[in-house]
Length: 113
Length: 113
Image 1 (spheres, chains in turn blue, brown):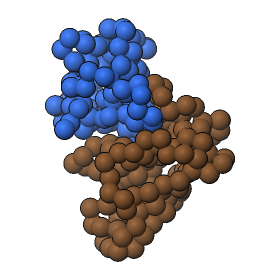
Image 2 (cartoon, one colour):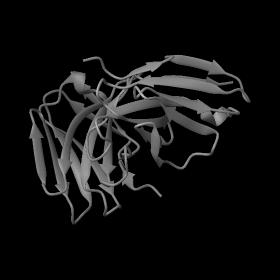
Image 3 (spheres, one colour):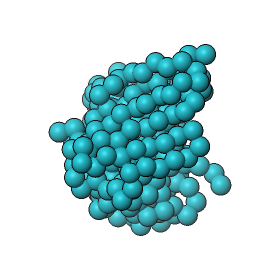
Image 4 (tube, chains in turn brown, red):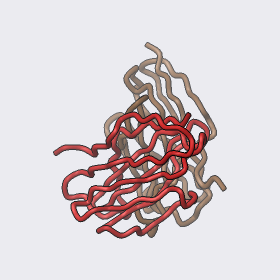
């Protein structure tokens, strides 16, 4: 039972354009969502999060949108830079599940110069 | 502040052996979680420890176990290794382990031959 799904295994974008990464979830108990970025041979690093009481959160070039009725969230990166090329994981937190984030499969983002 | 430290970085074992992985969390963080990353399954939650107590456990067989020491350092043990245990094992820490971002280490790459 995959509670968090990232249906696009990969995404290719030109430098300077917008990157949109999508994530769907099925667990209604999730009330906190996070995006992580991962480079090869490194651990995931935190990017941005959003609480279920909000529908948008911005941090510099990164914006996360949450649509609770559709159980969908998206990460927008504007403008995209070659250094953004990495694997992006979306994760959901049920609030009562200690230390456990339920992650999607990840999306490989490639930003071309 | 030092990040999450995992040792060793790489391990090669043969089927049937056992292995112990080590994790030192960020100073002041009392929650330590372990995740397994494989190409096909993404990031899968193994278990979480807080104040030397396991508070949460994922869907892994009993061959996977862990513990936490009084200084919050944690170890993970896998007994009777199988080929399918080859993966990147990631440790993450956070202050309380609930509704907060996790800080990941670089991981231990385990290869089972």
